[in-house]
Amino acid sequence: MRKTFLPLILGSLLTFAVSCGNNQNDSTDAAKEQNEQKRDSNTATGTALADSTKSDQNFLVEAASGGLMEVELGRVAQTNASSAKVKEFGQRMVTDHTKANDELKAVAASKNITIPTTPGEDQQKHIDELKGKKGADFDKAYMSMMVDDHNEDVSAFDKEANNGNDPDIKAFAAKTLPVLKEHLQMAKTTNDGLKK
Image (cartoon, rainbow, N blue to C red; front, side):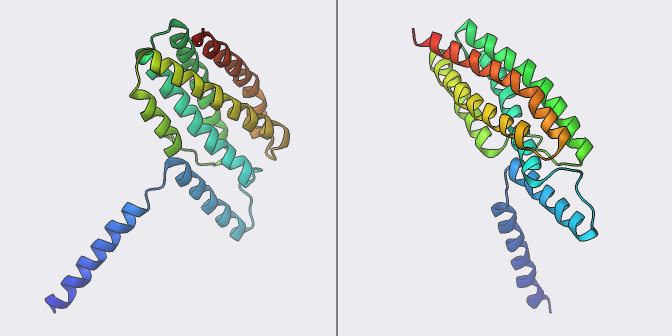
């Protein structure tokens, strides 16, 4: 009997190990999956997940991941940048995005929406890439990325502020949008200054 169960046990352990290894969703995917399960559960019981739709929830998930990346990269800029302007920009990212992240957490908690507590896989790749750069190389790569990233942020927050379904999430997006536009202008100005 022992000989029969040993292969079954080993097979089960191997299947478990492989499934765990293949199922390493990044934090944004995991949060979206949890929200999907909540929506399915609410649909089955006839209740709604607050007033938010899948797109509202996904907006908060992506915004949370992006905000965490902004804070982390702002901290990296404090040590890896050579330009005082880039360091100043990085500090502003830490301050403003920490505040926005706290507001986002409060909105998500009030809606029972799961958000990531660590940057998603794509954002982590940016962090890891920039951590390996120093001085002028860091300055150029960081500021170029900040221009691109804030262009995307402004577009996403504008879309949510104008087209979102959940009034609280729309209000958060509308309140944060002017700060992101200011960041975009600062990023462009700082990036242009590095080219001179």
